[in-house]
Length: 301
Image 1 (tube, rainbow, N blue to C red):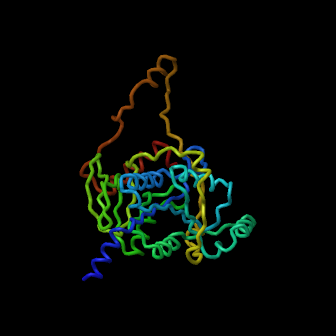
Image 2: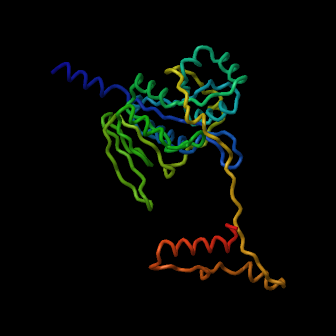
Image 3: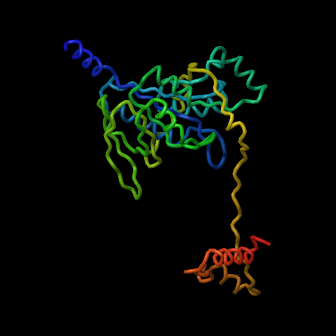
């Protein structure tokens, strides 16, 4: 009984290990790399939890999983330093064992050859099993790569942890349970109490991240840590990736002859009376009407 009480007291005195997973973001207009919005909001929640807890009660670390070494001064390096500017002293780069021996040689070899697509979630699973934190916080969806939003689900399934999505605030954490607010449709919120260890993903409705300080971003350190074997994503390597193109909006032709008629046609509100409502018709009749409309609009010729 004394041994059990001492172990419980030791766990209570130990700091809460919190890991914030961050990734490379991409500006929607310029396409330049930056810190990801949802990951920055997740890190902001972790910093708020550390600030509202007692000194030394929370041990916060940020990880970025990469299939290749980040070259100092590169665009990737500048983007990741945006997280350091939020108040972190260091950021850990979780890389494969094959690239962790000599970062400079690995970076030079990757410049000459085509970089393969590497699955990073097995690296995170290996590292999380080694460190065994109580809480892992990440964004709901990445801005680069596949952006499928499956990373939290893959990590939670591999670790056997509960996953809570759509978190907008972390109210408290006593080392055994986490109390957080979850975003619901129409602006509603739901308070949840989750048993630790757990993995939570942050919603876009979470508080905006603080501005990154330039001096702190320069002082921060990016350290690489080999955490597993390199795993290729054969399916992703077969994907054809191309920039998305915004399709032009089809405009209604104006057949007015005078300037007055053209102005009235441009200022007039779109009317919805040109459609045809079908009720109680068969599938063949409905398909025939749709085909007729497509031909009238010029979609089918």
